[in-house]
Amino acid sequence: MVPDQDKTCLGLEYFCFEGDELWSMSDQELIELGKRELSTLGLADACNIEDGLVVRVPKAYPVYDSRYQESLRIIYEFINQINNLQLVGRNGMHKYNNQDHSMLTAMLAVENILRNDAL
Image (cartoon, rainbow, N blue to C red):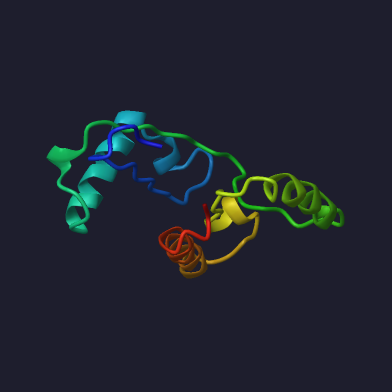
């Protein structure tokens, strides 16, 4: 996703509701919040973060209705044609799971890539 091999792309997810304080922050305020939190966690120095992008996703959680399995079947048939695609997290796997499961899917994706299973 990043053309420069010396850089990486990080994604931060914040849980909120449309219209609440976090949702209503400006893009720049959210980027600065992310920088501070990455720095506090020791994951990145804020001064090394070059840019940020905010994407607000209303109603981002998967919804299970009486037809969701058929919808998932259509999605899975399409994505199964892409040999080197690693799906992780709630939106990637189209499942409502907790943060631990989401992180586990990312760890397993890394293992697949390191073993060249995904290529």
